[in-house]
Length: 341
Image (tube, rainbow, N blue to C red; front, side, top):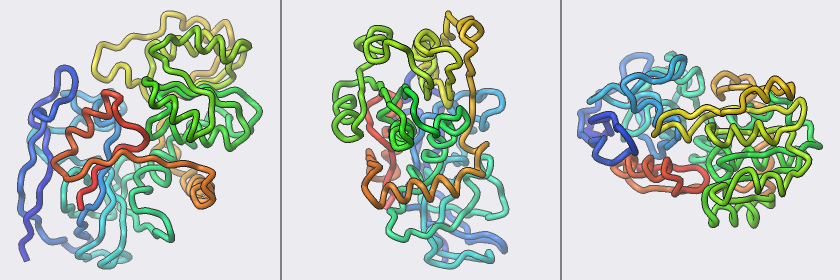
């Protein structure tokens, strides 16, 4: 049986903010799986800040490659259902995660390592969990949040942790993991609505960074912070260096302030020397060994309601480019997703 499916392709690399005109949705014939492959009907696909880094002629060194123009966008996480299988260990009806999202159907080889292993075809058991959670708290977002706190030794509790971009997919999880691990958490976000959600739903102290970084951090943490979980970079990293105490640590998982503009490094980098600070860059996919313990921990918190998960959902594959533009502009809360159907 010949299937026809739609997929999103990059039409041109944006010079500034992402627009829907940078993409096109095309219909393609979907081949059946070859021996060792499976055919997946995608039901959910992810929208992540890191996609913006791949919408350039050259992605940053050491990162995932740029999306080629006019071709399928490989390397985007998705959840789906197996509809045909020619691979051992995968049966029709299985729920799986993989890295061929932003399309309705995907032929996937389970032997192919994707996104450093985090996107390799994997069968998941729902067992009370929502399928979309495997793109959020039980997937790469949860791993990134957990790994970032782990690599700077912030899971032991008893410290003051500042989380930037705290209402986003990773930030909102880092806030809660840090708090549930016994830390005092200060959260920052870019709108009053987000701040209210952080305070009322996640139960942490929060402020709008547009009202000023230094003044608000100084008021909330007059004796400094111990750890900063930063995915913003730029002026946020500069503020972190100012407000970290001696032997403070920064977990750096992104620099979203630079994704659509010229990079602006911190002017006070010498404070890393004078304060004996640790600036630790990391990637979730480099910490796959933490996935089992992260999933067990977060699944338990989700089951008891101790951890709150919020999604901003866009409907229909054609909405994926708009979803990305809205997320990069800061107009979504929690995990941004596209429901394909």
